[in-house]
Image 1 (cartoon, protein in one colour):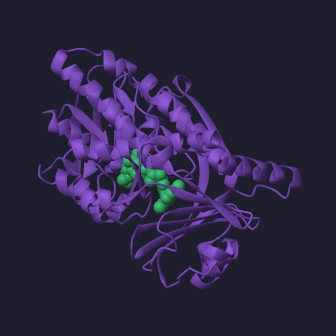
Image 2 (tube, rainbow, N blue to C red):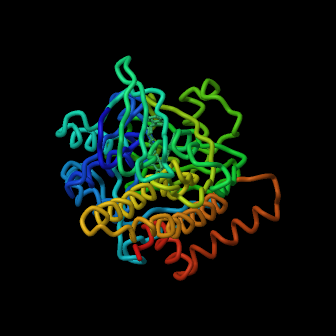
Image 3 (cartoon, rainbow, N blue to C red):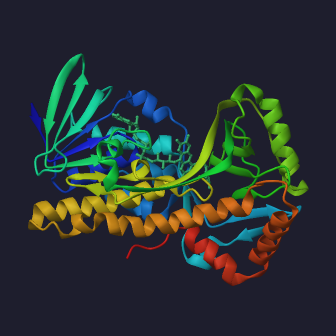
Length: 390
Ligand code: FAD
Ligand code: DHB
């Protein structure tokens, strides 16, 4: 039997960042992760950090490489109807974004957490949560072929959308909201120079496309695809042809193709669980909510949850006050719903839904409004860079 103050399920960005922030404030935690460190840091996912996320990572003491290697972006382009419009994030909102891959962040977090041996247990199986409705929750799990028990004061469910934490809450205690979208994103990573110095979001009659990057020599591109599509149907040549066909001419001629080294299809979903806690269990990041990737809010929302929860836990141990912890769900959900609305809106604006000419004309009208109205552009910029904390 082992004891810790905070048991954390999942060593994605939420779980590791929470453990790191708590350690910096003298709070002890143990992280249980199903996969190996190589698997976790090899997952290609998000790539864009809000400045509040950047600041939180610096506060957690893991910002040095990120600040050296990350790319500061002050704006992005929205391309439509063969033209384009730049959203001046810095000018409209006063903030920039940082391009830094989630897998790089995972590496930094893993390295930082390795400073305390046995804090993160990898390849742990059969994690089960017990007595979460009491003041003495415990977790059982299998590790290195043995069964173990972990006693704690609090459990943080940082185990993503398919984890065991949310499922441990009696279903009648939760309300879940969900919206699925009738398409997915096919993403490709290749060591070719990005077609533009900033990101380009593309609305096109063949479907949405996004030209992003991870560095000056590494590009991350996405095209909207049917939900039922299979990666085998997308040899690199088909991907490059399709992306080329969706780009306005001035970008298309700059597109450099090359062999991919990662290709995957993700379905798009909006999902919110309310409340984000039950008894001594707190849900964090993708375990509590999912947004479609348009606008890059998933990872940033996870970091925002971590900030609020860490403050609550630290205050509990420092001042003996449960107030901030009791407010965790309401404070986190305020931000979550605003980001859910924004991601849904940006997805709806840019993707092709059905062959409905009326809906298509409305999309174009809204894009033209965005290009012509400083107020509309400012609203987009404000949401994109992340709303400020209350
Ligand atoms: P996760 O990263 O999912 O981490 C959860 C961890 O828990 C994992 O390591 C998992 O192995 C572990 N786990 C699960 N079950 C158990 C268990 N039973 N026991 C122990 N451990 C368990 N966001 C963006 O902003 N932009 C993007 O482009 C983008 N692309 C994405 C692409 C994909 C394929 C996916 C899945 C997500 C993407 N996201 C993107 C979302 C973003 O990556 C997530 O919001 C972010 O990873 C959330 O972090 P998390 O730590 O909450 O969850
Ligand atoms: C990336 C993903 C996004 O969803 C987005 O809006 C911007 C960038 C990316 O993976 O680089």
